[in-house]
Image (spheres, rainbow, N blue to C red):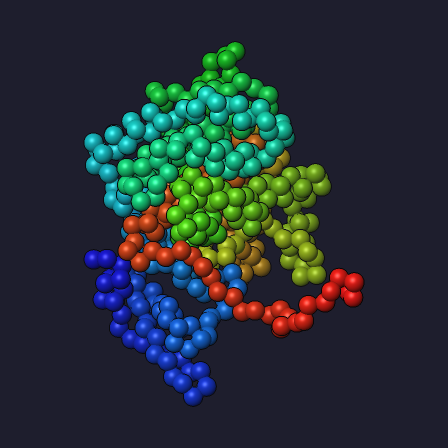
Length: 438
């Protein structure tokens, strides 16, 4: 059933809007999880009025079948499958296939998918020269978005969003090459030679060897690091219509190619209010360490309404009781900290903050629980990933979600270019004043 017919089939009631003496009936749509939406698509044409919703926090921009999120009950499902089950039974590539193509792959489908990704993991040799043009201290997210955008210049055979075969090869190229692009950015920042991807390694193993291997010695891949990275990528793989996903869809709605759309999503993710939250969390832990590791002092500062300090990595805008993604990676976080046995006060501070948040009535009443950004930042640090790369890892994880939404939008018969309206609040018509009279 196409999206239009499906929404019509789900329509059961109407909402009534009173504007002056006129009453307008608006269709009330019901989704498969009983979510309700008022269809205002004909509001302006019928009444001349628009809705005003700063930040689109109450506006549904699309009917999507990719991810279901219920913040009140702490539910997150990819294509109907609970995130807890996927994290326990799948690796990141299997989850990526599910998000992009809508179904869990059969064994032969998954094998072909893995093989195809391995064949596209290398970068064109000329692209390596790009890294010579970036300053050594360039932020990896700037490099990531620049190089991803530049892929459109090297792969001009796959830019047509209306050609399924071209879209398919662009999807494979992006998933396969993003870890290589990211690892090269890290190696550039520390002055070490780049490591080529290895087709004999799985996805996460390959990324770790590109990040940390040296030509002067053997690099042993830690299976606990691989497990932790897989989990982090899975729990970040999609999160409904967030800022970066909405950006990918909006840019893609103009029929911009997939590389350009994803590059725009990377830029949106870079913001500290979005993908940069885990980086901000570890930055906060560093600040507490520099101030003598006095956790109680900062807890009290967070409780003081007159103090501008806020604890990063606690609570969530969408999840009102707990973050299911944090629950999944919490034990992995503790396992890594116990295994590493490293002398880093950051980890002691993190554990003390976690205990405070879970047991202090102030935090419990306000539902300020540790969220996914809190645990992911600590895990990345335990693996040895530098803080500047945290958001880059988020981008690698979120990529299949971006691809799934971009593909869903282009497959929809109701696709339109995104064009929000506005309520104008500027000056009314004025007479032009000549320059010598101003």
